[in-house]
Length: 160
Image 1 (cartoon, rainbow, N blue to C red):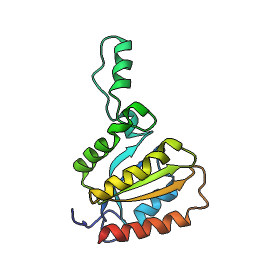
Image 2: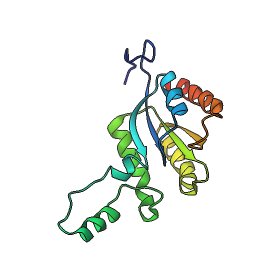
Image 3: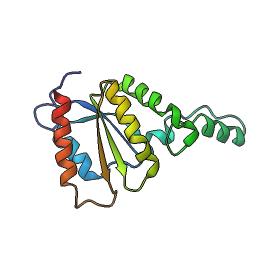
């Protein structure tokens, strides 16, 4: 989808992206994405969409609700038995939102995500979707200049 005039980020709004990871990005990462005009068109954050994205009709009994919630939960690497369907769920989100790229926000020392990222990056590349992996700490707001530079370079890549 083409760039559109727009929303205060300058004269254009840039390409759409999906943001993925365990925690939402810190303000410095959000500001970096906004400063280069990236639009978040898909939310694959575990503490956000993955935690509530597949809410189902509630069965009458609480045990039935929790059984359904656990066994039919949106795929997340923290629920290892559902991990095998994670790529398909991500591709479904990509099909719905038509992004030009995916930014993976890796929370430092989150092993589940780090085991998964190389596989997802490779599979996305096979499907023509560019990705960027950023390692961050949610409370580290003073060491983000390298993140900003990488986001700027990524925005240039997906614009081409």
